Image 1 (cartoon, rainbow, N blue to C red):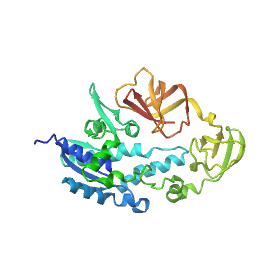
Image 2: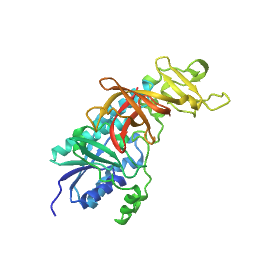
Image 3: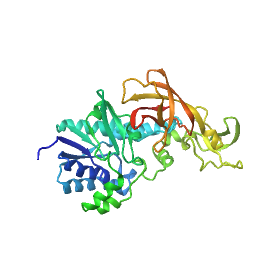
Image 4: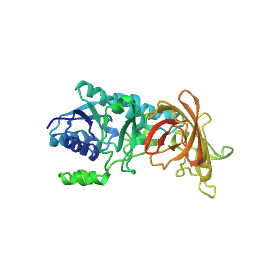
Amino acid sequence: MSSKGKVLLGMSGGIDSTMSVKLLLDQSYDVHGLTFVMTEEKNATKATKSAVDEAQELAKKFGIPHQVIDIKKKFRENVIQYFMDEYIKGRTPNPCVLCNRILKFQELLQYANEINADFIATGHYVQVADESNRYFLRKAVDGFKDQSYMLWRLSQEQLSRSIFPLGKMKKQEIKDLAKDIGLKDLAEKKESVDVCFIPEGDYREFLQEHAAEIIHKIPEGDFLLNKEKKVGKHKGYPYYTIGQRKGLQIALGEPMYVNNIDASSNTISIGRREDLLHDKLDVEQVSLMKYKEMPKEDLLVKIRYHDKGMMAKFDKVDNDNYHLDFVEKVSAITSGQSAVFYENEDVVGGGIIK
């Protein structure tokens, strides 16, 4: 049987990338596997430490070539440093969004070119489409697993070479398929939902360890009730995020939530849940995917991963900066997070919330 072409697949040792091998082979692709080493062992879980071994064993099971590339230095300098810098600025970053664009997909492309591969592939739940010479993402068939929000920064070059084998499948179908081919343990393995370099999910502890010199210079500051009245002391603004309720140690007779972080004055404003609601935001670093120009029509905007989204009107400020007006108020707009724009199931583009 003739091959559809050579494809370089990013393999993590998990079920999604592993079953992508199976699906691509079934479609007659010449599959090559590539695994990145991105984290130091002290920052990794046991699962992460054995990911390379697992990926190699699985590649051997499927009879495909497999390569391991160490990109720890690039990851530390570009992604981890960005993560820490954003928190120091009083913002809440999406490190995975940045990593996908400037590291994972770029490194995949680079190595694909070295081995003369036609395509790159990953185990993300998303689809890629093209119209009018523009490539763009389309939501996965499995709406809950859809990862288009995390991939909005991918370039036209990256998209034009990408294959996403899981885009038209449900997660349960993938698990069932794994069991059918003798990978029951992989199908039943618990998946991590944490940032890969913070396996326990405690970013505060990570900042204390890796940005200690800066963090320790940031003193306690004031909690302000609705940006005015001082009602207590906080431990330093990088330890808090918009919408946070737990750990404030403020007793005002009703639940209080962080609704504003001002790094310049080291103050944190708190208020009631309804104080988190806003009907407008500004975005920067806007990157368009489906169109060269922003559509005049309102678009659905998601301001967090599992957000249902809200329709918004767009006004261009300048270059890659836009002002958005929502048709209804949305909760906990967070500086540094991604705002991703959708036209039905298609990703129009995205930006970073200012």
